Length: 546
Image 1: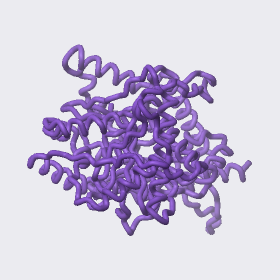
Image 2: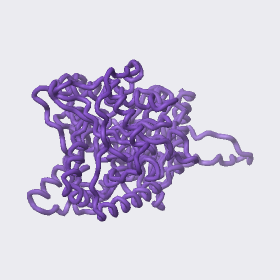
Image 3: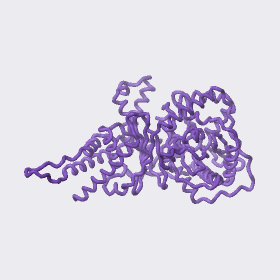
Image 4: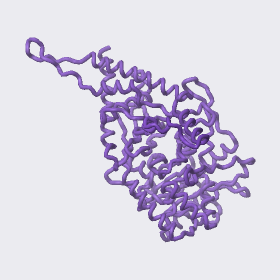
């Protein structure tokens, strides 16, 4: 699903995650926080290597079923490698003796990449203070160095173009060694310069944009390696977040990793200065041909165009949250999915293929199937909500009487309840392995491999429309305040919409593309606000009537 897509992966595939903003008085504090994050990544990797990750179990729908934990083992030390036609994943091998496993991180600063060994077989792992000292050296060294070649921008290219550029890059042995180090590193720690915010946007939206793409090539977009599964981002102006390559794992595993690091950094002691300074890290040197320099310049131009095309808004709806939805005897996820169908119908007068990820972790190596929220019951309810009440008619005596269309209000509730039952049934079928999308995907790929061509069914325009998700959604719940996850739309004339349900509010991350004449993020946001307000009135009217 991911490796065959040829589009650039930032914006189109990689989600961004925003952490709570910090205030740094000096660069030592930036290095302190980065060192604590790296130290926790080491703890987490060692726990994985020992096989000590606690087994999770389902908490609803056949409670107690064990959940597959494989995704958690595919985060650290993982990298996507571009190849023509289809990329591949490089995964670390599980060590026989975890205590002897060597680890490194790559620190990106001012577009330079510094490999830092954080655990060696002969001396064990670095202390947080030693890591902090290495990071401080990187920040000072990069500040005094001439402008770096913006090699990281190659990872923003169309995947086939990047694959061909990489073939040129690895002809040089030094470049090949650099790429091998990046591939096996635990993660990329991106130490960003301040800047890249758009003045017309709010802080939440700017934070997500910088997590997703770095703010543009004038700012921090070249200070990235987008193929790496985990990129932690700390900016000197306090903007903090993460960008993750989506192929190895779903959001739940990534968020668990991030929130653990956040929580531990909050209570950890300040890294103590090391008694002895280690050898200073050196940035990677690249040997670039004139053709590769042109590739980098072309990548910069194209990526800035993509960034300009992204129409994104982080919107916190404060009218109510999951507690009110539960009081309506409705699953909050079902409630929001129907709200999104209503939102789209209000804007366009019809529904479109909708994607909502459904976890399949009840199954070995299970990833996701698709909860299809655009069904006939949702359509009937959305249409009823958009139908204006019949205006009061004059009676026989002439003067108009004020009246309320009680049947209409009751009918809307009945249609909502029917839509909620249908949505719940589709959701339960999916998480228990009875969805349709994965089965069709399996049949399609098996047919392609065995027959060498696609059967007519998969060439039918209806199938094409079915998998063209003009509304791509997911519930991405975080437990830490002021954290949220967003991503781009998956088709040129579609919307992306993640949502994070809080007790008395909902954080939506809404995206579309300005180049589309069909979509408009602000119009969608406004329609969503109106839909949620109308739904509250619908339920309040029922309570008054009761």
